[in-house]
Amino acid sequence: MEDYLNLFVEETSWYNDIVLRSMLPEKWWAPLPHFYRGWLRNYIGGTLLYMLSGILWCFYIYYLKRNVYIPKDAIPSRKAMLLQIGVAMKAMPWYCALPTISEYMIEHGWTKCFSRISDVGWAAYLGYLVVYLVIVEFGIYWMHRELHDIKPLYKYLHATHHIYNKQNTLSPFAGLAFHPLDGILQAVPHVIALFLVPAHFTTHIALLFIEAIWTANIHDCIHGKLWPVMGAGYHTIHHTTYRHNYGHYTIWMDWMFGTLRDPVEDEAKKM
Image (cartoon, rainbow, N blue to C red):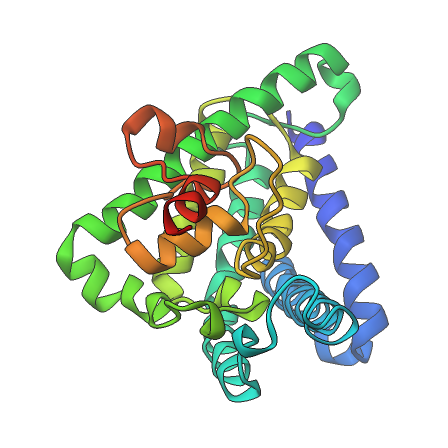
């Protein structure tokens, strides 16, 4: 068992070396305990992913494709985007605690994680992945919904994110502009799933960081019309009504629990 758990430690150490060696002098991070190296790597990686994905996506939709996807008067101001970046960057050190803690629990054998796909085979891996994603989708839906329904949670946590409630205030940078505890709570289902279903370690870490790209995408106000994906068209409605479209990757949970509002139907009603 100890030899198997060392596979996780070796993998996280490899990630640490890749990120930290390329970004910082070794004397700054080499003396740190393994746990803190992991946090530092997650912080640097999360920040780079957030900034690069946000900058490139904003440049594409607001400048290269100006007036193609979004009318000029609906493009958020630089001030609004800088405010969102400021909120996200204040929360980033806290966000990065979640993957660091999940890695610690995995390395100590507290979860159902497996290191190699060959340990279970591709069929089982894909089956487990589907169950993992269903648990995550269900968990994020209800966590998000309760952050609205429980008034103190909304007032003291989630309201920070909902100051962006119009098309011209939403941007990809709003994707991580949350109160730190709010952002962590909405990602916690990824960690809870590790205790309920066998999960591939690398896939789990990748999915946590894909969240940064996904949340940027669903705040760009561009309706992709890719059923059953809970894209930006649905999420923009959420930011204007506050009572619909709590789901994350798909529309299924909103459809099941009666909170779905379709952007195409919304547009048809306005015409």
